[in-house]
Image (cartoon, rainbow, N blue to C red):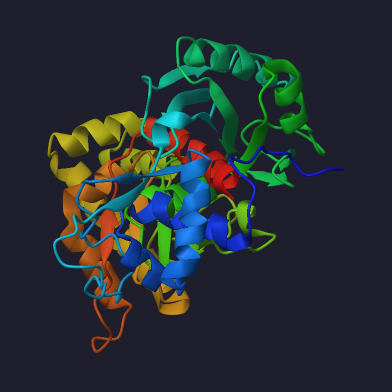
Length: 396
Ligand SMILES: [Zn+2]
C-alpha cells in the first residue's frame, strides 16, 4: 500500500523547504529576521532564496515586513545590519501562482472551497448533502463538486485536501469513519485521483484545523496549543512546533468521555457527567428534561440566543463544564493557548465567565491563567483547513 502521492512545488534541500514554509507562515518577512529565525547565515539564506525566487515560489516585495505578533512567541528580531538608506524589502510567497481544493465531510454534508497558496479563498464555499454514503458514490460526488468549484479558476488547482471525522492511513486509506459507516480500509485517495484526476490526500478533520491555525491562523508562532471542539461530538487535538502531535489512536475520540461534572447527565456508556454532556444530542436531552417536554438542540440554541431563563441556565452549565475540560487538558498537556471551535462553539460565547470559572475550579490559583479563544465557526474554515494541509504537503 503506497502513501498518497502529492506533487511538490519545487525540489530542494530540507532547508529550502523550511525557508519556503517560514515565508508562508510569517511573510512578508525581512531577510535578516528570517535568517535569525532559522539559524541560517545571510549567505546561506541568500542562496536558498535565489533558488526560490527563480522557481517563482517567492518574491521580493517593497512592502513592510510583518512586525505583528505573528512571529514565534519570545522571538525578537534584531536590528537590520543592512546599509542605512537601503530600502527595506521583504519576502513573500507567490500565493497567486497556485490553487488548491479543500473539502470537509461533516455529518451527511460536504463543504468545498478553492484557495490560493496562502489559503485565501478564491470562491464561495459550497456545501451540499451527500447523495449516498457508499465510498464510490462519495468519491464521484466529491469529484463532480471539485470540477464545479474549480471551473474558471486560473491557475487550475494542483492538489486537493479532504478531511473527515475519522482516520486515514498514509493520508490515503480511510480506516475509520464512524459518520460514514464504512468498514475496513477504503482507498478513497486512490478513487479521488481516478475520478477527479487530481492528487487528493485524506486527513483527520481536527488535525487539519490545527494545522490551518499553525500555518495561517491563531496558532502561528505558538510552540504548543490545543484545539477543543464541541458539536455533534467532542474533539481535542494538540499542536507542537507547528504540527499536530502524532499518536496512532488520536482519531478515535480520546476526549469523548473525560469526567467533567459529578451531577451531569448519564452518557450512553453509563458515565455520569462525562464530556459527552457537551454534545448537541446530550444538550437537547438535558434541556428537554429541564423544560418538561421534548426539545431539539436547535430549540435549545434558539432559546439560549433569545435569553430564555432555563436555556441560559444550561448554557452556564455547558460553559462551566467546557472550562473544566480545558483545565484538565491544560493541566496535563500544558499548552500556551486553547482554541475553541466546532459547530456549537457559538454557545460558548454566551458565557465566557463560566468558562473561566470552570477553568479556575480545577487549576491551582498560582498557575498562570489559561489563554483561550473562541474561533468564529464556519464549515468554510474546515474546508480551508483541508486545503491548508494540501498546501503544507505541496510546500514540503
Ligand atoms: Zn461517557
